[in-house]
Length: 365
Image: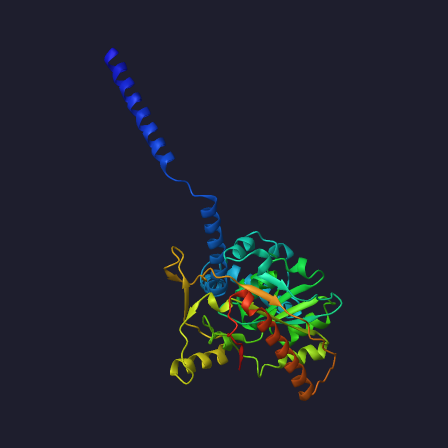
């Protein structure tokens, strides 16, 4: 009996020693610092955004088609019925959820890019809530990070800088045909870049609306690369005509650093790959860019996350526009020229403040 008790005591002593050794080893492992935790939260916030924009719509569409051939087909049928019932909602102002703008994830998204909060969005002039506005957003870049963060999320203080102004951002109408992705877009305040949708916001939604349009569109994304500032704007005049028809003031904005977030393989004009991109863009509404950023595990790896570069969006002086229901081409050209001059002034006055040199020029084609 004494032998058994002694053996048990030795086993317990050995177990306690092993446990103490394991605890010492665990405590010796360095715990992640608050800085490391913040960095991972920022990385995850950007990852969910990139995956949402690139995969949410296609993956949901494939899943719903798959469910049609299973015993869960009522889910697809019910969602299809809902989409048919809700078809025109994107064209009528969408279904905005203010709580989504205040989502804490967007603060981590904002902080991923190394720039002070007060420098993310810069106001040069006031916007009166008694008017409606069309904000021209330049440049397009790859994923319009600056436009999304400033005009859709509340993380950069748009509502505080421009009290009484409700910002909206336009995107391709085809995005609102993708299941679930359309709900995601509308909840944030995005709407289709169509005459009907923009006209609704400028004429049937009261005043204090600011509709941001990435004027260069998908075609401009094909020329996006670090160190290059080329805008497709010379023949883009539809937004000016709409501003005249609704009496909406034109406001230029420029996101410095937008083109630095990704690397892109830019094919020369006249090459067969460029022709394929342009043909695809005309057919589908968006351009298939060959681009890459950083990976998830390391800054040196390659992936689809943007590089952590500073972005500063400067909102310029409004161009006063009268209301003319049927503006002539000459009037449209006049106000288009005024807008271009205002944009050039905005760029030249701020380029040296936000990462560019005095010799950098804005090229408009």
